[in-house]
Length: 529
Image (cartoon, rainbow, N blue to C red; front, side, top):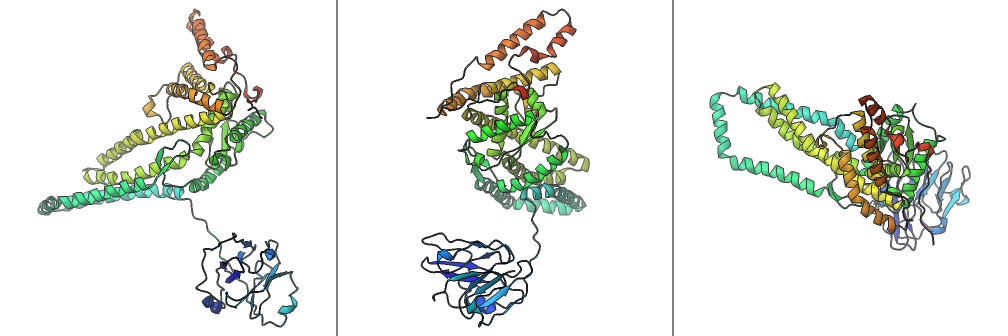
């Protein structure tokens, strides 16, 4: 704990205060004298008042006098003195070896003298006759940081479900234990008070509706209304924990910065962020690159700007334009705050589901039936709300990511080709094709069609950014011709084995495909005036 310091800046009509108390309560008189002035709010009419940061227990101290005397005292062992009489000095030798702060007990309305700075071991001459009282060190408690709000709800979520199950099961056992005559009396009472019961249930529903509409916010860029319970600052704290987890998992698989693949990703992300720096959410973050030597076709960006790209994705893309779109898509998830939005919806639905969970365990005659009912309820929530909403967020990230790529003068026509290639690869590998409603992402086919519908708008954005006109044939046309050639060559094969052998190497038929380290990392540069 520190001391109380309240002083007035002449001519600025601005009063500063630093609230603190000594351990032994020796500043009570001073505190009572200025209790009416001690406020954390600052009132300034002309100039913004500056704040001094003293690295020690006395963390902030605000001074009087001319603004010319304002200093930022950072190095340890400095002392601040106010040359007024009836002054008490408070020394803190615990962490700030010899720092003094002398406080005036004059009324704030009176004229105060100027501030003087002196070094350790040398008091000003005009302080020699003063009655200086030395107070021993102030000790500060260790600070404990609370867990991020989303992490707290993740931890208590199982406990909430367990309490709902216990409550529902208790209601069922209580009902079974009631004698038949009391059950009839209870039913009769419920029938008489059915309007009160309905009113209570309706009031609870109104509370949920009010909570939902009072927590609606507008999505950046798209302007879509969405529920947002958790703030982005909470998710940045949580994402730091997730970042540590991923770094621990992939610590032996990280590519060095000297690797050509790392440099390609770094230049692509840097070009995207530089081209979209007019968006506050893009310019506010520092994008840090991590390339993981993993065969999976995957990439993701944490809310704190940590970019993770697997080498499997670098092998799957055909050119730098496809890679730019994919990374733009992942950056769009962060800019649109999709992580916080999805967690907010899940939290809201889980809270609602606690009511249904309690009812299920209360009305089911046996625990086995209640378990089945709980499973059905969870699957209905997953396939009716969670997964469709996740597909909506993916489609929105595709749209915004395409806009980011267009502003970076990327050939946006290559975006749909990537998903067509992914669909072709899955067909060749014989992977089972799940219906879209069972997936958290749109199907490759629907994704490519959606991007084809967005490409004309993206081309207009690209043109409005003064990007050079696209040269060469449309990559969608090249892919279509390659597919036709592939089908014709497969029909000419006489045996099924040769057909399979031909289809197992489809990239040899794509002249525009090359290794990512061999890709020319060049972008169309906007003409300068």
